[in-house]
Length: 175
Image (cartoon, rainbow, N blue to C red; front, side, top):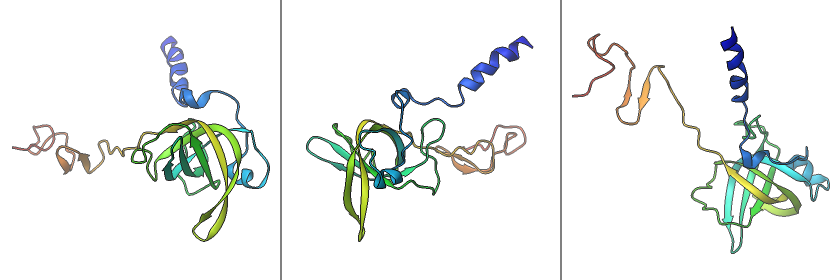
C-alpha cells in the first residue's frame, strides 16, 4: 500500500508540465480576437497557434500566427477553433525553414499595438506582440505501437506478428 502512495504524486506531477520559458509570470486573459477590438496595450500574454508566415527583417523576425486555445502544458490545441490571428515580433533571427508554415509555437510577451494588413482582400486588424519568448513545439510523430499495420522507418510497412512468419521467430524476417 505504501508503494502506491509514493507513486501517485509522481504520476500527477508528470501529467501537465509547462516548459520553463512559458511558465514565468502572470498572463492576461485577453484573446487575439478581444485585442483586435479593445485596448489591451501593455498586457502580458501567453498565446499560441500555428505559424501562417515568418518574415525576417534586419533586426527582428516577425511571425503571423493563427491562434488556438492552449492546453494545460501551454501547447496549442490541434483543432479548428481559433481566436483569430496575431503578429509576434522578436529581436533575434529565426530561420524561416525551421519556423515554417504550420509549425506550432507559443509566444510570451506584451501587446504592443494593433496593425492593419491585408489578408487576401480583407483588411485584418492584427494585435502585435513584442515577444520575449517564441517557443517552437516539437513535431508530433504518429506512433502506431502494436496496432496493425506496424510502420517502421527501416523495414517499411508490415503486419505485426510477435510469433514471426513461421510461429517461432520474432516478427517478419528479411533475408
